[in-house]
Image 1: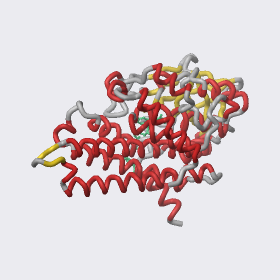
Image 2: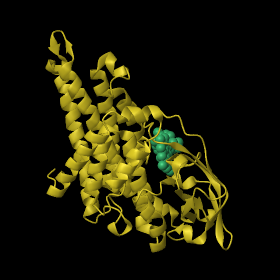
Image 3: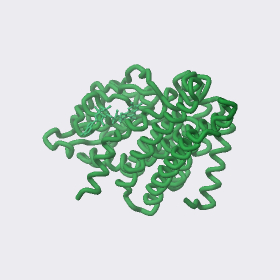
Image 4: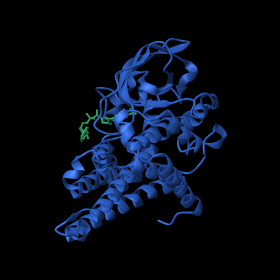
Length: 377
Ligand SMILES: Cc1cc2nc3c(=O)[nH]c(=O)nc-3n(C[C@H](O)[C@H](O)[C@H](O)COP(=O)(O)OP(=O)(O)OC[C@H]3O[C@@H](n4cnc5c(N)ncnc54)[C@H](O)[C@@H]3O)c2cc1C
């Protein structure tokens, strides 16, 4: 890939930020279970949270290649921070940018860009994961407002959110055409969240249920039109996947970095591990797959910047980058031997963090379904 000068400059800026602000921090957030407010404030200040939010609403107004660079470089050091950024950007900002009214953008998108609000995206339910159209959350039109009842699960940032983008059924008889999307503030009566999930990886992000009990949502908080909810979800995920794909690429590169560092230092049989051909071939295989993922991810981002809808490309990028992030993290840990299993080395955390990548924002199997849908006609 040949990057424009502005993109190379951005990459350097993000790398410097990571070196300066995030040295020992991934292990701390993994231990504590949340991101420090000061770091979130700095991410906001550098507009790393708001890369794709238009300038007129306080964002960086940058392109998707820039967003991908931010996601790759931050996730290379800390996958939890990557999740925080992609949840805010891809899942919350994106539907507001694409479907929000001017008033909704002023009220929710601007404070999101300025770090005054934290948002979350509530789609998944206990009975509706991959089958996202099967949600049971209901919105009843009560004249002046909608009344929402239901339960969402596994929602990133739910315990700390100021508002949530919630999909709910407005007309059951119409199936997926009966789903609508709402902006629901967490301070409204009837909105609560469940316990912070005790997760295997990305432990620096906060994940919980959202419980909605007779929540009164004003009519002006309907996002898009009635019945447009499924379309909003598909649109959000088609573009949003680029963020997770870039996160997976960063995690894979981070695992490769650790492996290369370790095999040059560790001596067995009087040689550094890097001198064994098996090590070299393993590293060569890992590096090639990381680069293949990089080309897929930036291709999807470039297509989006050129005005195309990269539904196929973003699914391929997300699928491949997530799978190889797991494979590369596995091999990197193997190259660490017993030390890889001990928390003193970052590879143990990276290995755990990588595991979510092939599950959320559409499992690898869902990506395969999307890809097959495009290529088998
Ligand atoms: C840490 C974390 C953060 C998350 N953040 C959010 C968030 O912010 N907002 C949100 O809305 N959701 C979020 N999710 C939910 C996530 O997107 C879902 O967990 C995911 O889509 C899978 O759904 P499920 O867990 O119900 O698995 P299921 O859909 O039950 O899948 C179980 C298995 O069956 C497979 N499968 C299912 N259907 C098919 C099929 N038709 N063909 C072949 N295989 C199939 C799956 O690939 C998987 O391997 C998060 C989840 C986690 C764990």
